[in-house]
Length: 72
Image (cartoon, rainbow, N blue to C red):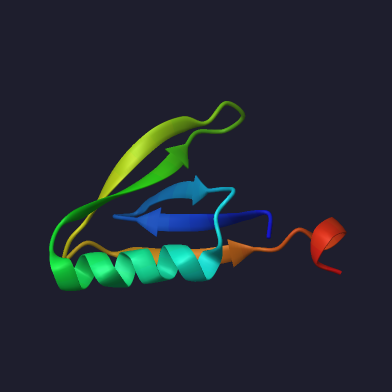
């Protein structure tokens, strides 16, 4: 996998170097346990770290982005 695109509160972020299922389970656990921060990146070119607060009521989508060179 190349990265995970994250759409959070109408903004686009990304996570790289992590497994999609692991991140998904982390988000589900945060929803059950209470507010939790999820580290992601924002920016084109040079990534800047962003902490996203996972809490009920915030729109969040995870989209796995495959790397054809690796995943064939």
